[in-house]
Image (cartoon, rainbow, N blue to C red; front, side, top):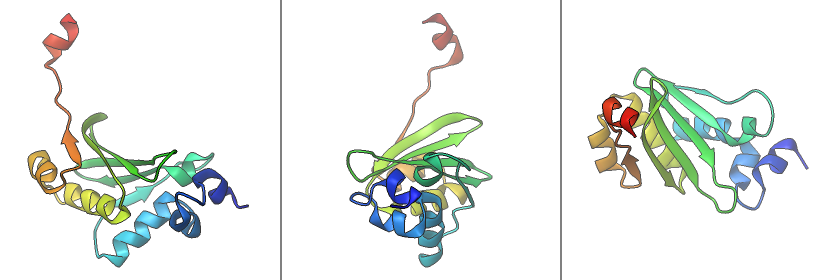
Length: 132
């Protein structure tokens, strides 16, 4: 059994095993659907090199991880280290579409309206957060 199949689980993610992990699968999916998802990176070592990916653009970073008990993709949109929106979906094409939209400069309101599975994270003002 390959490192990718051990890390990913052939039962839940056979397509990702075949492509060598989440990052290569996202690159291929984006190319096939003519989506610009920015620069795609993955950790260099350990299980995470197969199960995590980051898609970088001027707008921020789309961090993607995998569900371990069921097939789904966990998405966080981050800017300046802060999570601005998050969601889960079951389709890798939708992950690429979210990354493409985010990288093209759509607002969070537009993105969450377009992708119902994404939810904007409401942050408390610093003064309120410090008082808690």
